[in-house]
Length: 451
Image (cartoon, rainbow, N blue to C red; front, side, top):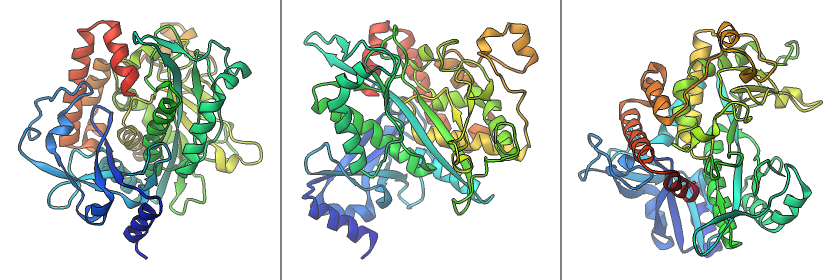
């Protein structure tokens, strides 16, 4: 039985009527089209048509002037059979993640998922395989008839009171993730009121990006079934802790059996390759932020002394550093030592964020970059002069600054390619202009519902 035949059989067995063909766009929102089950066999081969203009649409549904992305032209949303899931939160529904292909069948230059695939191939050419996971936080809110948002609890960080308040909905979320083949790694209430953290297990990086889309969809949909709004916006409440999506990643051999970031003789158990890769990420961090923390709202979160990181520092288990060397599990260090990027949040497009991370790290490998000395305190506690001596800089404080840094980063721009980089910058700059001209209520309203 072919893979397509297996999908058709699974659709029939689950009595699926509609199959969602999903993608994540330049505004970092999840969109798609739906195919009826009786035409799925043909759609698996030919995909579904989509106007090229959708990659010029921002998160406010404002179409931007991007060359080649107007009313003329079409691409195909072609689903990846490996991503097929029956949706446990939507009746008679299934979904797949899609690549954007041009009419000649080749990857379209503005396809974020194809960009990540290119970076995976770039690593594979060196015998390397990246594994990753995004460690998400989200806020569970009640919404009244006037549209006011109230957290479901006002409990303390890691409090059992918060566990009790969210027990029913969290059980349903975990069950829905497991039904889609996404095991969790842990769960705990976080610092913000109504805030919860639900890390999922690491996976090969394309699967990790797909898992992030399923995570966002699952949390929001299951919460809605329980009469709640789940928001993964970076800062849904300016007075509370923000929501992150820290990226944990490691580099493995092509068979996925050996963690190439592990060195038992190093003081932090990190290999020379790990240090070079980390140095590349730190070197490109100002521009990389435009991909990992891409929304206007992101920069309310990235402030000193908020455990979200604000400086280009690294350190062992330093949660104020941009990159943390995560200590391994006792007895399993060889399999669990990894790096964690702190300035990342759930408003990103995971294909762009992870692809950009790989491009930056591979540049560090190619140039044999070495990071500065580790930071063993909160880098915000250093004075400006000492930070400068240590090679620690404050990174962009606004979406606009990050976008400018991305445009000036030739490594990241070359990796993205001309069509994707141009359309992404145009879309994101339009969002900055719209939110910079509006008030806080407008910003919160549009971020809290869309992510």
